[in-house]
Length: 423
DNA sequence: TTAGGGTTAG
Image 1 (cartoon, protein in one colour):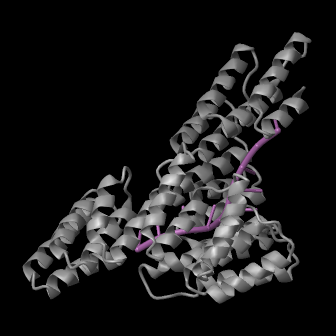
Image 2 (image 1 turned 90 degrees about the vertical axis):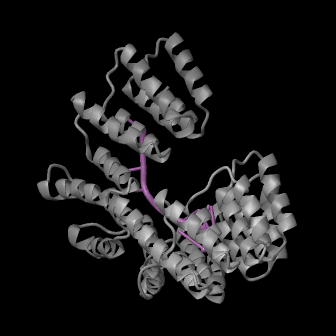
Image 3 (image 1 turned 135 degrees about the vertical axis):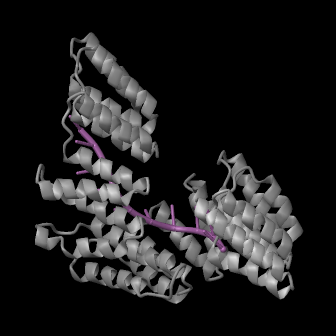
């Protein structure tokens, strides 16, 4: 019965899994802790954490005590659904019930802390595991550490950990390489914001070669990371070469790889080919919000705002929710095309806005030389806690100065300082 | 019976 239920849960057939459970009970097969844990995992993966938690209560009512796996599955599900505080709460609940966390629990705890942007806390947990030697850490512990450090801006520390793996008796997995390559490829972008270029992207490309020379069998992850990073930095030809390698290696592309290829084709100004590929995967009902956003962005960059708007509406009919990234692209391209009044109208209709939206609007107001309006919005957004790019802040202040609003420029600077101190 | 990696915007 457990094997049947596990198979149903893995393929998102929860209703069937439940009916097998009921049939089993009728036949006198009583569910055990493994049966309930499998259901908890299925519900937390495909339904909701609350429903998974209901199963936990059901097992208690049936007289079966949850164990460490029950809580690990619930924690996983919570992190997956970005209910991060719920995950921490579950960890506490588990210890309060006297269930000892295992290395899986600590791994999930670290993953959750990294996602919450608390790398110091995650590192403390890691040190506890490694230094106190209370339990053996495993390769997943390192994978989580390497990925988490990269995502939180500590790429050099991650690289050090990666290079020391062998000394600690571990061999990096494909997944470890992918996380490290991703960290290195993205680092350049993060670092570019505050200082001059550093060669992290090159290091990422070297690591891809290292993987190849060590005979690792690639999946699509490393390819999409590297191709996307090269596209982003304008190195279209190199991106194309690596994409060719991916295809010639006989790798069957999944949706994320397709999206990477579609983006590459758009950047190569081979939009017709990109659209052909989109239609192909759209017919199979595979397109996701990334696919649509790439197309909308491409249409906007070509100044084809009518078709871009049509595509935004088409997404709505497909049942996608509000696409913030696509709207940000739309807004930015309108501004860059000199259509600031239209951009302002779109901005007013947007139901969700983030730091990208605000930066785009302020920057485009500067492009349109509306510096006073831009400065008022800039101060308001910074006070509201949005992260506005330094380049945009400079554009406002420099714009005010060159337009002879020197006094206003000084006031804005001082207001930004005060707002920064508050945050 | 449970993990961890990728694709879109300033």
